[in-house]
Amino acid sequence: MAGLDDVFGDLYANVDAVVLFSPSGSYYERFTDVEDLDVIVIGTENAVGAETFVELPLAFDDIRERIRFGLEGAVEQGLIEDGDELVCATAAFSDSTSIDTLSRVRADAETHTGIYDLFVKSRAEPEVVKAVLELAIELGKKGQKGKPVGALFVVGDAGKVMNKSRPLSYNPFEKSHVHVGDPIVNVMLKEFSRLDGAFIISDAGKIVSAYRYLEPSAEGVDIPKGLGARHMAGGAITRDTNAITIVLSESDGLVRAFKAGELILEVDPEAY
Ligand SMILES: Nc1ncnc2c1ncn2[C@@H]1O[C@H](COP(=O)(O)OP(=O)(O)OP(=O)(O)O)[C@@H](O)[C@H]1O
Ligand SMILES: [Mn+2]
Image 1 (tube, rainbow, N blue to C red):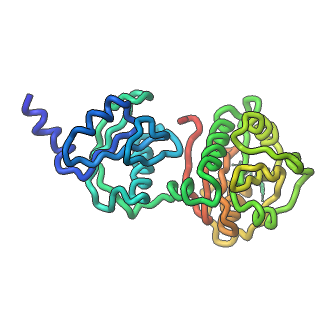
Image 2 (image 1 turned 60 degrees about the vertical axis):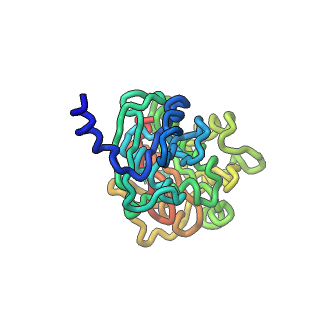
Image 3 (image 1 turned 30 degrees about the vertical axis):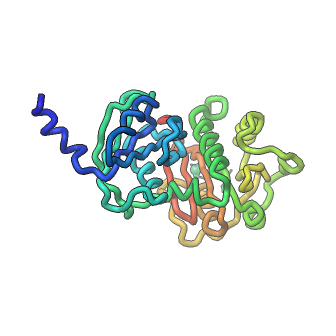
C-alpha cells in the first residue's frame, strides 16, 4: 500500500511540529522516540506529563474551535510562530482520548480571538474564570426548573466594578466568604440567577455581590444584534474596568464572554 503513503504522506510532510490533542499516555509515548520532532500536547489537563503543554479552558466539542484556540495558546506561549506548518492529531468521532483525525494547519497569528488572554491574562485567576464559565454553561444546559434563564457574571477588578454599579436589592453575599467552585455556591448562584442584575466576583473568586445593576458608559460598544441591556452592560463594563464578563442569554441560550469591550467567546452550552 505504498500508494496511500504517497497521498496521505503530504499531510505530515515537512511539518514544524506535531500537536497532539488530549492523547493517551501510550499514544504520546510513541512520539517521544521520533528524532528531531517537536511535539506539543494540548488539552484541558496535562495527563501525560508532556514537557511542552498548552492548557485548554474547555474541551471544545467543535474540532475547528479546539484547534484554533489551542494553537492560539501555543502562539501566545511562543511555542509556535506565524506561518509554522503543523499536523494536529485529535479525536473527532470519539469523546475519549483515542485520536482518529489528522489536520494540517498553518499557524496564523493574525486571527487572534483573545480567548487565551481571557483565561491567562485576565486579572482574575484562570481557575476562577474557568469555574464561572463552567457554571454558566451548566446553567444554560439545565435552565432554572426547566425554563431558560439568563445570567451575568462580572469577574475580577471587583472594587472598581462595585463603584460602577448599584444594588437592586439587599446583597445575599454581604457578610459571607464564599467562593465560586464551592459546590454549595453553585447551588446558591443557580437559585439566585432568576433574580435581576449581575453577580460580582473578585479576582480570587469570592462572590462579592448579587443583584448589582451595572452602570458603565456604553458608548461605542458593539454587541450582536437581537441582544439587549444585559449584554450591552456586560460588554461595556469590561471596557470601563479590567473585569471580564460571562453572560448567559435567556433569549438565545448562548454563553458569551467579553473582555476590554470585545466579544471574545461564544459557545452553545448544548455542545458541552
Ligand atoms: N445594566 C444592567 N446591569 C445588570 N443587569 C442588567 C442590566 N440591564 C439588564 N440587566 C438584566 O438583564 C435582564 C434581561 O435584559 P434584556 O432582555 O434587555 O437583556 P438581553 O441582553 O436581551 O439578554 P437576554 O438575551 O438574556 O434576554 C434584565 O431583566 C436584568 O436582570
Ligand atoms: Mn432580552
